[in-house]
Length: 166
Image 1 (cartoon, one colour):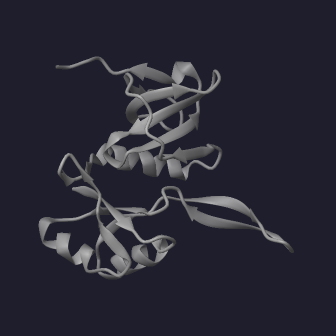
Image 2 (image 1 turned 60 degrees about the vertical axis):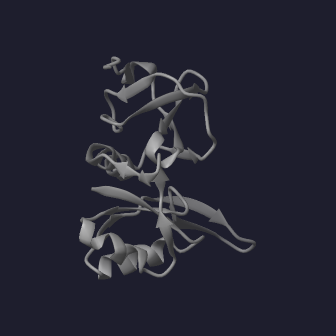
């Protein structure tokens, strides 16, 4: 199962390295950003979701992750550790492999909307809740388990509503 770990500020890469050294499968989405200093500009890898890392663990490894330095705890959703479906992690990994897709992340809480799936393009398979539209090619998609909203540049024909199944 994939769980979300909350990490102390600016320690994401340290936690990732420590978990890898403990043979714990983890995923830290990084994206390159151009940073400006007084004397130079430099491309640096920054966490897409500051303060979070995903771990794929067994029940036995649950406490081992908590014993890692800089780990604050697991992210909880409705009283339980937030479980992220494999297909959402796979979709996020595929999204991070695309160099021509600009991704913005917001932790603002948006109003609930329709369930959607991206049906074509590099983000194909990503599911979430449509929480807003910014122009004709920018849509906000909320991943509920980690209370995060992704703002992605895609066209409307790349989206499909997921039929209600109740």
